[in-house]
Length: 279
Image 1 (tube, rainbow, N blue to C red):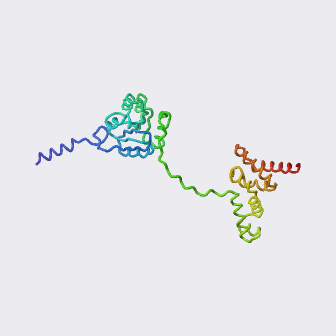
Image 2 (cartoon, rainbow, N blue to C red):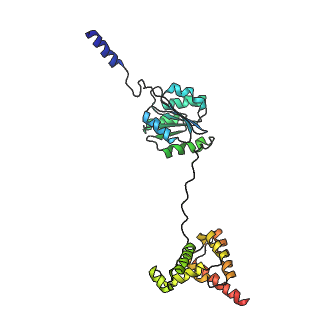
Image 3 (tube, rainbow, N blue to C red):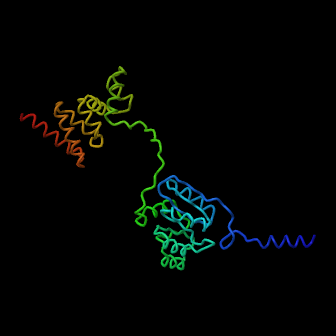
């Protein structure tokens, strides 16, 4: 009985523990065929393997901790991510071996930012070395940089377009709405202005905007970034054709990046008046 217990104790303590340089627990590789690009990842730590799977969404990937399993799949990889300190082989040394077999871009991820590790990277044939913890942005940026410029962009899963919210109201929409509400209110302009807490002069200007020719309204609505509400205190003093002409002028100049300020609109309005008098 005692001999059996001793033998069992020997068996327990002779087992290798999990960790660098020791026998690894058995895990299935994490595999995806979501994209046209296949990324091979050799990573010792299970949590890091799961993290890489989230980071590489949109790519195809084969993520494993098993060196032999990884090398069997090497020919299918378009890019490779290696753990620096794999139990079976140093990541920097493995990078050199992989390059001899296939000229594939290689990223080494290491928690060791020492000068020694930096020297190892320099003599290895790896293309980049990232210090853990590695962010998704950092990793994807590294994959998309010039070192992997021969690799096409990953296929992103098609997403349903988001429902568009209602476009924000422009000053023209507000003026038209205000005009409708006033007509339905049966109030005087002064009473309506007081109830809605706006000045009477502002209300009158909005009524002028609401009464713009339809063709001018269309120009304004299609080029709202070119127009300001204050412009129309002056523009609305013109006749119908001149209003359309100056609205066209403002939108045309705006499309060229020459956005009019109020003083410019006042200057141009004055010239329209002068042209009308001369004619």
